[in-house]
Amino acid sequence: MTVQDTSVPYADAPAPVALEDTHATTEAAHGGEHESGGLPQFEFQHWFGQIVYLIFLFAILYWLIAKVFAPRMRRVFDERASTISTAVETARQVQAEAAGQAEAAKAEVEQARASSRATAAAAKARVTDEANARAAAEEAVVAARIAEAETAIGKTRDAAMTNVSAIASDTAAAIVERLTGKGPTAAEAAAAVKGAA
View 1 (cartoon, one colour):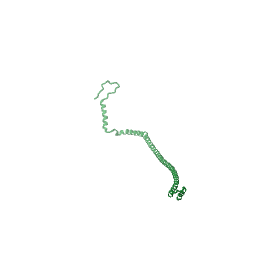
View 2 (cartoon, helix red, strand yellow; view 1 turned 180 degrees about the vertical axis):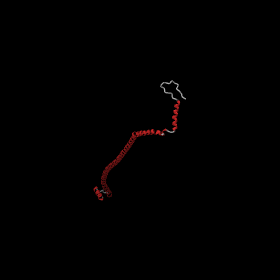
View 3 (cartoon, helix red, strand yellow; view 1 turned 45 degrees about the horizontal axis):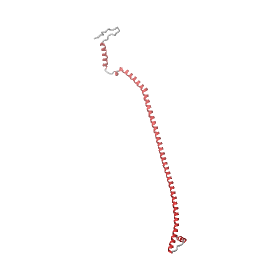
View 4 (tube, rainbow, N blue to C red; view 1 turned 120 degrees about the horizontal axis):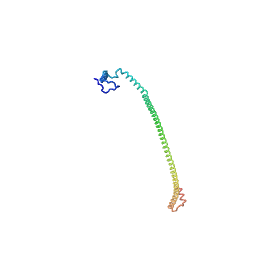
C-alpha cells in the first residue's frame, strides 16, 4: 500500500517516497547486522582502522611521555635528590658545628673549674697568711706582755728580797733583844743575817 502526499506539490519538490520502501531498507540494514552476530571490533574488516588508531594513540602517548611527563618526573627526581643531599649536608654541618660548640663549652667549663680552683687556693693561702700574721702579732704581743710581767715579777722579787733582809735583821734584833735584854745595832743584825744566808 502506497500513501500519497495530498498537499500541493511544488515544482521543485522531490518525488514522494514510499514508506514501505524506507521501512524495508531499515529492516534490511538491521537484519544484516543481526545476522552477523558479533562485535564489530572483532571483525577482520575493522582491524586495519583499529590498528591505525592504536599506533596513532601509542605514538601520541609515547611523545607525551618522552617530551612532557618524563622530563618533568626527571626534574622532580633531580630536585628531590638535590634537596635530600642538601639537607644531609646541612645536617652534617650542623652536627659538626654542634660538636665544635660542645667541645668549646667543655673547654670553657674546664677553664672555669681550673680558675675556681686557683681562686679558692689563692683565697685559702691569703686567709692562712693573714691568720699566721695575726697569730704571730698576737704571739709577739703575748711575749712582750710575758717579758713585761717577768720583769715586774723580778723587780717585785728583788724588792721583796730586799725587804726580807730588812725584816730578817729586824726580827733577829728583836729576838736577841728579848733573849738578852740588850738589842744589837742595825749593822750587827744585818751582818748576822747576811752571815746566816
